[in-house]
Each structure stands twice: as structure tokens, then as C-alpha cells.
Image (tube, rainbow, N blue to C red):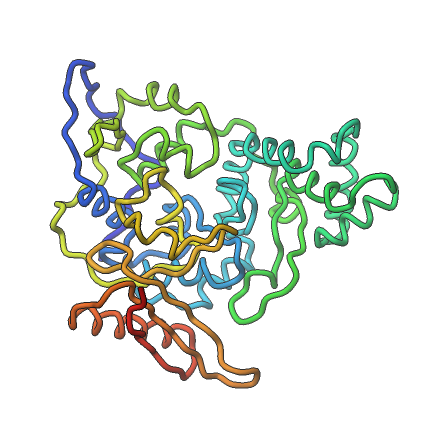
Length: 389
């Protein structure tokens, strides 16, 4: 089976002369490259933690399904228990990282990536809560917040109430969110566990993992890992994925190690020299991609896999991202997995194509939904709905 490309790329390529004219990669070729690196052309036979590391984390804002379903789509023989075991052994954690959203990452990446994305969280705090925190000593607030969450894991409601008891003139929610943005908090189990769930209670990464944050994380390494999992990419793509800005100089500094291309609009793309770039006509099987999957959230121009006319049908204004049906490497519908009535093991996988499917694609979608139902562990039904305009 295919193996993920290395998470931390190795030897530099030969420098690219400033006078060289980059080759043009079509939108379809960019889509094939992305799907190959995301292991959505061929499932990989690697441990779940290795895939989580290769992907530089998986969006996990909605608990608990998305990371489990994202790994199911990419790994041969993956079962829910394999990820649950990693969470319970503290080998992977849920924490605020790229774009300030909750991601499931390896313990090592939590400690390395969190300092790198601190500017994203600082900006979010200023934008959303700055007026509620004016004049407050944030260092003292963070120290008290650390004491409280390391005493025992706390929900933000609990944390805000405790902090607000000593600061009655302040908004408790703003106090809790300030601690969230300043400290590297992780959500502790059973939150995010398949089939269980629980309140989003937090403690610090250092307390939970028993190790300090990386004191010298490398932004260059983060960008190279992004290219390994999501490239080829523009500077704007990298920035969209992580939420950081002013990365032009980083890519220029890395350029001697990289290859450069142009997309169909003439934009400059950077890529690793040894990363997969399949032919644009490489066959891609029908796939069910998880809700909130970073496949759809990690580029400024998402048309390599998401046709613009369908963006509004899978991404809502309030931040919801539906599970998507991929046909020939492009989003062609949405899907959802719903549980049966309380006390019932029945489940339903509902697939909603956006346009009529060819018979072979409809059969493949039904088969993939059947495999998903089996993964979910219960009796149930697959329903391929008629397209609706």
C-alpha cells in the first residue's frame, strides 16, 4: 500500500534560477496532487498516529466524528478503537492550532506547533475580546487560569465563573477565552471519544503531556510539512491553512530547496521536489470525505477539489462544513452519518449528489457508504438520494 510522504522533507533540490519559467499545473493536476498527498486516491497501510502527523493534524472542532471519519477515508483497516487508544494514552490531543480552531495532533506536534500559531490566537483574542479585557493584567490572568485548569480540568463556563469571582466587573466568558488564547490548553477525554463524548474540559498541554512546549520551533519546517500534505501551493494557500500572515519571505527563503510552478491563473506555486504530482488524468475512486476535513479548508483557491458553484452547498456562513462526496476527484455531493433512535443500533448514511451520477459512480458511492456503515459498527441503511437543484 501507499505510504505517506515524509512529514519532514529532506535534502534540498537544486536552486531554481530566477530566469526560469515555471511549468504550468492545471487545476485538475493540482487536485490530483492534493488527493495523492491526502491519501484519498489510495488508502495507506500505516499507523493512525503517522497519518495524523503527516496531515499536520486534523480539524476536530466538532466532536467526535470528523477525525475518526477522516482517518477511515485514508487508512486501510482503521477502526475507531485505534484512535481512541491514542487519545487515552495521550499520544494525540485536541487543541487550538491552525486558524485558531481545534485540531487533533500528535503530542509532539502539539508542543511544537502551538508556539508557532500563537500570533493567530493573539489576533483572535484582540479582535473578539479586546474591549472586554482592556486594562487587565493578562499575565496574572493566565497564571491564575493555569493554576485552576492544572488543579483539575475545567470547562470554559467553569473557568470563567472561577476567574470572574475575583473580577466581578469583567465578563466571565472573555476571561475564559483569554486563558484559552494565551495558554496551550488541551481538551481531555472523554471529549472527542467515538461513542462516548463528554464536556469540553481543559488543562494545559504541559500538565497533560508532562513535557514543556518546544522552545525553538521552526516556521520553515511547518511550511515544508504543509507542502508535503497539501502542495503545490501559493503563499496565500499556506496562510489560509495556518492563519499566519507575512509568509512570503519564508517561501522566498525556502525557494532554493523547492520547485516552482504556475497555476492556470499565473500564480506562483511552491512545492517539494520529491512530492507526488500524478498525471491529471490519474483515476480517482469515489470517496466520502469527513465533515470539516482540511482537504477543503487549506487553500485560498479550493477549486482544485471544490467547484466554486458547490462551495455554498457544503460550507455554511456559520462555519459548518459538511461531509462531501468526491467523484473523479471533485466534490459532487454531501453526506451525513446519523445515529438511530435512543437505544437503537440502527444508523443511516445519507448521500446527496448535487447532480445525477453515472451508474458506476452511484454504485461506488453506495459501496463506500456501506463500508462507512460497517466502520460505524451498527446495523443501518444507506440511502443515495435523488439530486436536488
